[in-house]
Length: 277
Image (cartoon, rainbow, N blue to C red; front, side):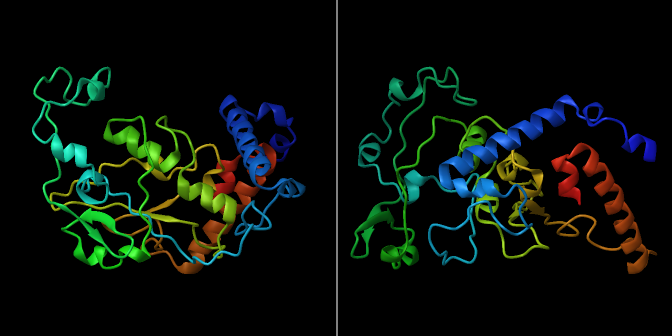
């Protein structure tokens, strides 16, 4: 193994590794140029520190819970009042909305009609926020919450629209919102992931229809990807000691594996290896 370590570095670099490292570098430089040029002074960061230093303002939020409700109630039925849609309830869908659009499972369907909200909208609070009358409790705090109605996407189907909302692109491969926040702001917990992901499971056992690319690190180092918590069995795989193996034996295996991974990482500088370490 010692002789192998002396082989020139160029022989260890694969096309995939080269592209991955190049993309990571470009992503780092682009974000740094946009946010703070001083971050280029240091190439290595402590595990918990983000790349943005100093922060432009003192953060107040300690944690964020982001609910991506795939298959949840439509914004047109909840917080985004469209009076014109109510007017057109039952009328044929205008061709300007559907022409040339890859509408999943509805191509060639001539019977598409507009469907207005099933429950009336009501104004709540001093701000007069309009939302469905089904949400009186949310309406009671209308002046204390922020409702954004300006976000749009060109994707008309569920999956690419989810990808766009979580990564900013309909094409897979971009870092997710959680990865950018972790990469930019860092985390206070060095030994824990910067963000975790929970996916729901229906009564029939069907998983929520959302792919892992929604919490992927994309071209950022993979250590910034979300860690999924599973609903069945252990929340995180391989977190328990195997049956019949003591904690010390497990520690010995992990230490030996990490030592080998460090040796390999020194040779190829692979972010995937760094993530495993």
